[in-house]
Structure formats: structure tokens, C-alpha cells
Length: 110
Length: 116
Image 1 (tube, chains in turn purple, green):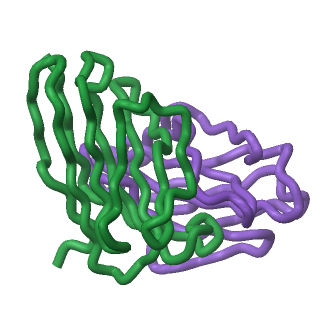
Image 2: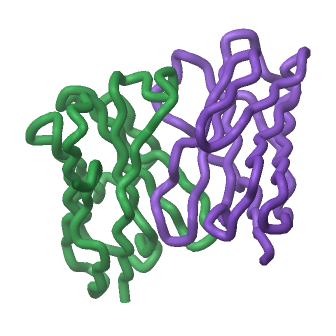
């Protein structure tokens, strides 16, 4: 799996967009970018994933740069319930489990 | 209905004891996982089963023995518990052994094990 780099922590004001960056400069052609989050004391929760096109679902948007070396998870209107650790994971289709790094701790402020 | 359920949620025990954590999923998935999250909050894969067959066995002491009686259940038995086994253990499931390919692992709420 390609190595990912995320800032250890970020703050965001409630109601504003939260933009969480992830660098994955060694990503290879068949590797996907996945985002999960872990709200305190709960199990990780899948958010979104993509290969090279931008993706959007009811939870978030994923923007992947054209060279695929970095991506940004966007929570369009952050709420206090979005306070969590967000994990960016890059993995290929042959992997059989996800490897979690240290993630970004997002604190949404009232 | 809880999709992936683990029992017990909390477990406090003495060193040297043997304990089990149970996991059940009602999603019809064929692959299940055990992850360990230590005090530093790193999540590490321990085991994965696909249709009752072990497909991932990371470097885990052989005191840890997973058992999958059917594809909806994956239990974790730990012998001779040590202080370093204290952690939160998460069970997860996915459709297909390449859960990472399908994009979604469903996690349980975790079982917090404290070894005294």
C-alpha cells in the first residue's frame, strides 16, 4: 500500500466546509483512495473512496488531483458530530484488508 | 438492528486468564476481520476469514486464536492474557475477501479489554 501523509489535527467552525488533505505521492495506478472516520470510542466508519475521478456521496466529496498524488476530503457543512479522526488509506485491489495510519483529528468548533 | 455486534463490550480480567470475544454480523457478508487498537490509537489488522477460511494472519502471538463456526461469526479467543493485550478489539465484515476493493468494511463498536 502507498504511504499516506495527513496533518495530525485540524479545526473547523461548525457550518463551514472542512477540507482534509492527504498526500500519497507514491500511489500506483491500481490503488484506490479510501476515507474512513472514527468518532470517539466507536468503530471506524466508511466515508467514500475513489480511483481518479472526483466522487460525491451523501456524506462527503473526494477530490483527487490529476496526478493522483494527493486528495482532499470535503465535508461541506461540518457539524459537531463530525468531530472524529479521519483516515486516508491508499490500497490496491489485491489487498485483503485495510491498513490504518494515524489519521487527522478534526475538531469542529461551535 | 446492529449490523456487526461484538460481546462483551467491556472485559476486565487478570493476567494469565483465558478470555473470548464474540462477533456476529447480519449483513450476509462472507469476510470478517479482527483489528486491534492499542493505547496509541493505531488500528492494526490481526486476522481475516473468508467463508470460514483464514486468509490473513498477521504477526500475532499464537495465544490469539480466531474461530469462525460459520461465515456470520468470528470469535477471538485469547489464552494466558498479558498486560500488553489491553486494547480495544474491533470486529469488521465485508462482502468479498477484497473488502478493500469493494470499498467498505463495516465495523462493530469494539470490545475494550483491560488486563490487570
